[in-house]
Length: 239
Image 1 (cartoon, rainbow, N blue to C red):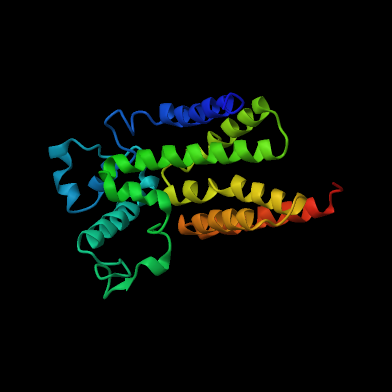
Image 2 (image 1 turned 60 degrees about the vertical axis):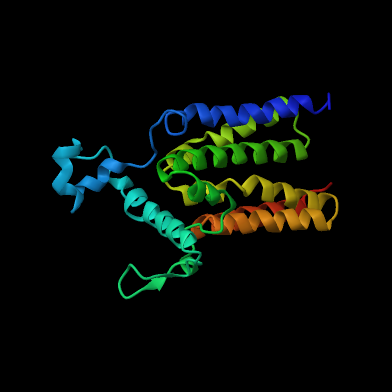
């Protein structure tokens, strides 16, 4: 336990850093949802002056989060409340497949936050926990490569708070998928350099499943390409 205590404190640090960055959207009573964007469209636009929403939103390019993603989560919550599996969305056109589309992240493990917390708070906590996982997995990957704790910590913080993750905070499918890349690389490294133990194969398969369930097909493709190139390079490297 004494040997592992520094790792424990590092894992806490990796949680506190994204929590501090998104404190207002988690514990500060604010939301990551750009709710002012709703008032650019009817029927909300009629009440723009009543709620004092700005005529021009801070960033209209983020409207997908409230016009699309939040509606998906609300539909899933509605289906769960009715004890139904959200296979079919009857609210669009004459009805369309819902879970088959993938982007709604219904089966992603951390999506449980959307089902138990108010949606206004869930997006902030979802972001913090995914950034924490990204940092933890990168730390474990570096340690698996033999990097000392200081170097592994620097790598973890650099990865979890990089511009890509912060800019993608309003695209939860992307952060959810990208967080699992270091764990996949670690399992690939262990399988190639040591042995294909069933546990490592199972962990790698679970990480890939979470990557897919996060709901961003492009990120899954990028992840598979990176893991494939890493595996090929590892096979060619003398051990």
